[in-house]
Amino acid sequence: MYKPYISVEEYKERGGLIDNAEKYLLSASRHIDTLTFNRIIARGFDNLTEFQQEIVKAVCFDMANFEYENEDLLNSVFQSYSINGVSMQFGNNMNVSVIGGIAVKNDTYNLLMQTGLCYRGLK
Image 1 (spheres, helix red, strand yellow):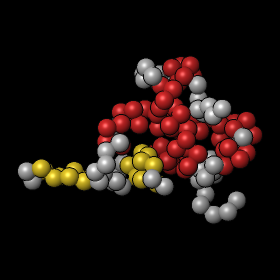
Image 2: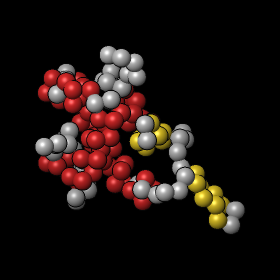
Image 3: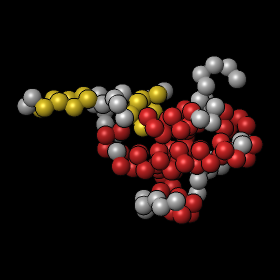
Image 4: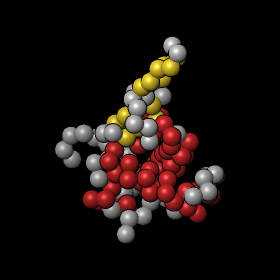
């Protein structure tokens, strides 16, 4: 059975405020797997270095909060829209990128990259 990279209890200990956090922690963990090309699953979380484990946990926390706070936008079928001269566009910008179909804050992705698990080449 698939488990998120941090438990609901650890999420709450870190200051998480989402009541039904399990859903968002699972989603964030699956998205981390996509961003790391399933390398965590292949190696096993317990086989990561302590540094990598802590970063993956921090990223899971951040991504769960981001996905909760932006759920309506992330689940929208629109890429952009305009009403009476006011427009809004979704996708890459200064703060958020879409990588492999996953919307992620740039600083969160940069943190995950420090693990070495996001390398696009063969490893």
